[in-house]
Structure formats: C-alpha cells, structure tokens
Length: 183
Image 1 (cartoon, rainbow, N blue to C red):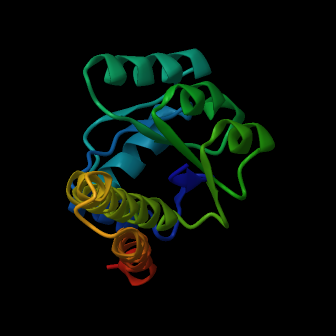
Image 2 (image 1 turned 30 degrees about the vertical axis):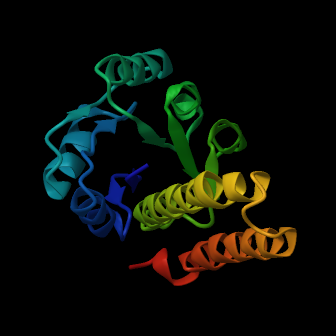
C-alpha cells in the first residue's frame, strides 16, 4: 500500500507524519519481500514492520492487535489484504485498489493518494466531537425543558418553540463541521 514496484508512493512520508501527529502508531504488514519492505520502513521511520506475510498472517496480526486492546485501521489495496481489511475495526482502500479490497473496506477513497487516510481520520474525529456535543445539547433540553412542559409549568407554545430552538441549535452545531475537517 505504501509503495508500488519498490517505489514509495509520493505522499507516503507526509501521510505517515500526519498520522503520527494525530497520535497514531503506524505498522507495515506486507506480503512483499523483506528487502523492499525494510527499505520503505527505514525511509519512513517505521520501526514495526513485517514482510512476506500471507493473507492469513496479516489477518492474524490484526487479531493480535485487537486482542491487545488496540483499535485498528487497516489500509490495503491488494487481494492479500482483504481478510485483514475485514478483521480491522475500520478499513480503507484507494479507488485504485482491486475490487475485492474495495469491497472489504469500510471507506474507499478516490485515487491512490495516501493523504486521504489522515484526512478521513480527522473528519471522523471532528464528526464524533460534534455528535457528542449534540447529544449533550439534546440531553440538556430533555432534562430541563421537557419535564417543565409535562408538569404544565410552561405553556405548550413556549415548549414547542423551545423544542424547535433545540433542534436548530443541534443543526447549526452540526454545520460547524463544514470547515472543521481539514484543520
């Protein structure tokens, strides 16, 4: 995935740096020969790498990481990646990948540019933050306004306006995502 024909993908170093900046660890699981994989790992500063793996060994490595309590994102583009892609918590494949890899992945990104991987993680984290905030807003409304309306302490028109206002706040908060994905 990081390289094709013994050549690193042009943005591999930048993508790896971005993933590390996001607090993630990167490991290479490859079916390729030790020499090219070792050179790629050294060039990218990746200490955890394995070469010459079968599809079953890749899937087993994913299972081992999960057993250690780690959340695993697998990125792969070959037929030998499909089992590992299916086992990971989340999986990505480029649009240039084999159909089998694309079908096993949770997200298919256009082209072969690896920068899409840290970008997708950044957008997913921002979406999660927004969703949790929105749950908080909704819970606050439901804990405060709904009981008051049920007890008759608030007139039904005011309760309806408050409910609409709550929905509007949640929607506007979600719209903040528009510019947040690439910060």
